[in-house]
Length: 485
Ligand code: NAD
Image (cartoon, rainbow, N blue to C red; front, top):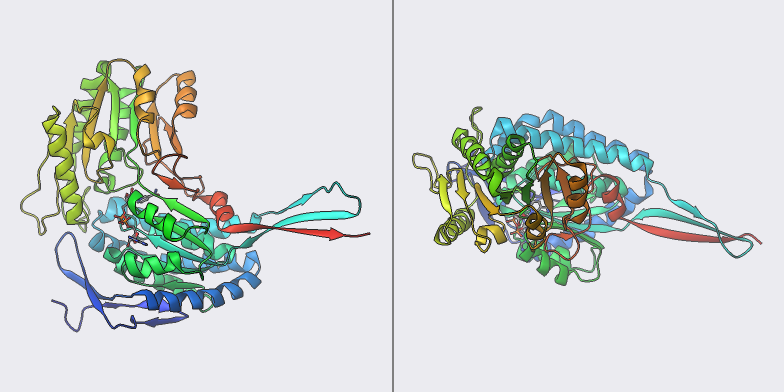
């Protein structure tokens, strides 16, 4: 039960903290202890509507500022995050469930760098001067903010993923209405405290805490927003694309990225990278390694090394420094993980490690790091994103089958290829239908300024976050012509 000492999380709309108009409250709980962390206001459409009106005002103020001035604002947010780094990391570990030392602090640091990165990049955005065919005409193009952005974010990286959107939107001069995942509302409010302390113009960024289906849908479908950014599942992506039809969309959706081990690979390096990609954030990562594709030649070594890595993980309280894997974030994740394991075993896979919930913890969301060998191609776990700590290894007779097998997937977000052969690296790098291909690095290798997003024709989304690509996404090209005759 909550009591008078329980923190209370509110919306931030038009420069002020406020509760939802309805007065409705929900409780935020820790996935590792089931303890109540805070009470949270629960908004609906009217709160999003108010935030959209405020964001339009905020946008108009931001748009009049120079890129240098908005850059300074972003740097001030980063400074405020540095001051609250411990609180942010602790909240992340408590509310999301990731290990504090190995993952929560690095996520906070990445988010701080995200504000600094946007602050830097926006100073160097350029337009162009286009030669005209007609005598006496001059043509220039400039980049301008689009207006108000609706940003909807998931629970798996609840500090860093929002910053991937908020920082470039702010730097470019857009007003923002941000609707985070309800299950990481405390993280969102703590991040918002840093943004508020930086002293942004009223309305520049508005936080609306509430369900995606109502508060989020309003932001997507309301004519007062001029662009949408969503990171979430492919299912939500399809709904958002329809409800916001006609608006510029950044959709960062699911992956089930394969790590491909070619015959000539450094097998130890490949297997360790795969294992890292399987269990980082307990597998709840869009760019997680979803499966390993390997030939019979290297199967035994890959299976042994991944199993050893899994067995060495310390699965425990996310606040303990020694913990290297925490709980899953929610019961839905446990259900899907179990279903995928059962399906794979029924189709002939070997259980090499794990496969069960861990007893003796304070919640029932701790799952053993699991390894499945000889997984069949038609197993659900090879086809669909699990979002849990399971390593499926799929074996092929010949490496020529591997490219086709990888491209048969409906997702195309992040893929790894391990090879020492430059020609093969290029063949796979260019031939894979994936927005990101990492040669000899884990699937989840990425840096903030590198373009990131799904391949065309797949279910992994549209548009590119990251660095200058993202600034281009959240701005529009304005062409101005001059007649000087
Ligand atoms: P989700 O789709 O359930 O929810 C994502 C967000 O959308 C939440 O804030 C939710 O409240 C909101 N939402 C839900 N229905 C909505 C609707 N009808 N209208 C508007 N908003 C709505 O996803 P999740 O479970 O929070 O996150 C996991 C998924 O996100 C996975 O599929 C993962 O791969 C994907 N993801 C992708 C990336 C990427 O960069 N491509 C990064 C992280 C996570």
